[in-house]
Image 1: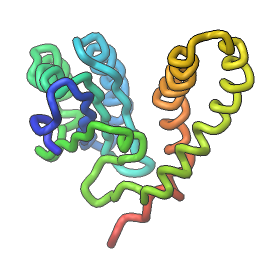
Image 2: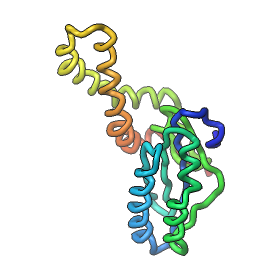
Image 3: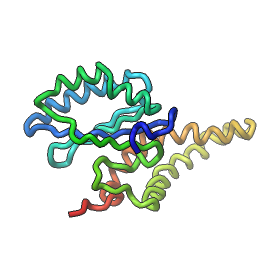
Image 4: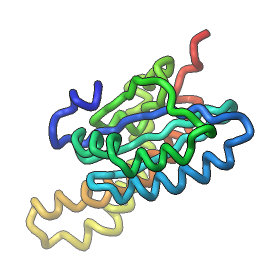
Length: 188
């Protein structure tokens, strides 16, 4: 799905790939800290995550934005252009294809055309492994204190506590930890 195909107002995640010149990785990684701080201050930003290569010189960045229009504003902004000028000769953003998604599949998707998303049953099992311990803790520690609340408020407690924990803490780490099991080896 291209950025323009995502519905207005729906969150969007775009993956960009960078090729770093051998021996310039440290300089590139220092640059990523600065551009990440700049992007996080930009209106609509909901997160920036860098994936470093195990081997090789390709880095990937996942940009999460509140909607495709704000993502486009960042991609075309003078601030971003200024940061790109600083890295000339060190790294190049490669490929013109940008992949965008709008749902929970971003917990599991990896950049690159040859990498397939994990089978849904593996995503369900991984999500269960991440959610179950926190669901148990919330029901044990938090929900008993809300017994006198009206049902709509009690029902809101679990997702209000659980979803941010899963999205920002648990699932990124769990998908990295289980990546060899989640993802098929590349073809060829």
